[in-house]
Amino acid sequence: MEEIIMSKLLSPVQIAGLDLKNRVVMPPMCMYDVQAEDGLPTSFHHAHYGARAIGGVGLIIQEATAVTPEGRLTKNDLGLWNDAQGQALAKMVSELHQLGTKVGVQLCHAGRKAKDATQPLAPTALDYDDQGSFKTPKEMTLADIEEVKAAFVAAAKRAEAAGYDMLQLHGAHGYLINQFLEPMTNHRQDAYGGSLAARFRFLKEVVAEVKAAVSLPIWVRLSVSSYAQEGTSLADYQTIARWLEELGVACLDISTGGVLPLSPNFPIYGGYQANFSAKIKAAVEIPVTAVGLIKSPELAEYLLQNDQADLIEVGRELIAQPNWPAQAAKQLHDHDFSVYNHSYQRGIGQL
Ligand SMILES: Cc1cc2nc3c(=O)[nH]c(=O)nc-3n(C[C@H](O)[C@H](O)[C@H](O)COP(=O)(O)O)c2cc1C
Image 1: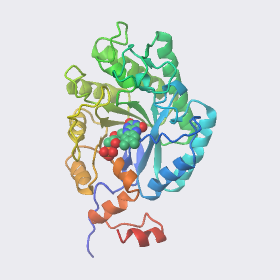
Image 2 (image 1 turned 30 degrees about the vertical axis):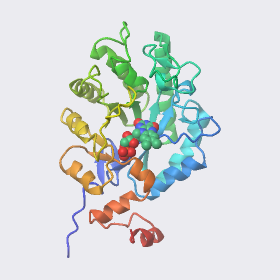
Image 3 (image 1 turned 180 degrees about the vertical axis):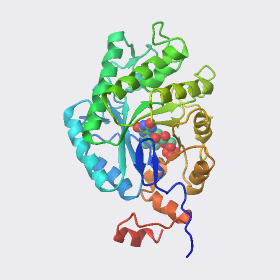
Image 4 (image 1 turned 135 degrees about the vertical axis):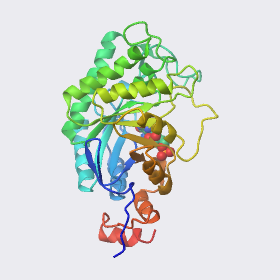
């Protein structure tokens, strides 16, 4: 009998505290589609995530979900700052589980990039850009810091109650946690600014307090390069990665950018952030994801086989192709379409 060699990409794996049917992860992607501005999921969210679950994704990480109304990127974001949101999301999580995927949620506070906030908060009162599209933030007091940490904890508890399999803290893309980590956005003179350890303190406390409150695996997404000379260096992010590992973080989701307005020379090519994942992976034992224009299954498999990452996140390509895992199975000669129901197999087999 012909032996079928399964790809790493599509083989089941136990990783970061989760049993996953494959290593294809849908990264958090804001849909800005909560028209009622109440942070509640709509039929769009159910269908959008449901389609990727049917499509065979191993883990869906729900889009940036705000821990406070003022911490939303826009007023059309999802939220987990009240119990009604927790209950509505629990229904969606249960549906996604029935469709055979694991599901996590990314908890976020946008800080100075909270576009619709009355008064955005930030480590330091510095504008994001000079275009006037974002308001000047208020420098957070120690009381503000305590309040936002408590909001992360409360949202994490609601996430656990809602049945999510993991939660991710959004420490990337220039949002609040990232603003604390970077010297360009954090000029504080107190215990939360200055040295790397001091700039890490806010994230450290959020992780520790969330971890004390829930038993879900905690992931952290980091932008390990701001593409700015004066930014926190990759070596310093390797140190941060080790500190997060020591705190018991289950997985690091490695991204870049977003702290400062995008430079026109921002590198864009298939796997453009994978080298950053590999460098963080070399510094820690915990699993690391790779993301960024990983559209081809062969590139995904290459990154896994060459130990550059443990999980592959497919973002925009999954928006374009909800059944991307089936396409990948075909291209990687796995041809195991049994995860799809009979009728889907008839269609997907033709891909
Ligand atoms: C429409 C859209 C919304 C996004 N929203 C988020 C988000 O909520 N949280 C986040 O961490 N990254 C967000 N991202 C970044 C993606 O998670 C991903 O890192 C990025 O798109 C690169 O991967 P890709 O080339 O596979 O799309 C978003 C990207 C897109 C295209």
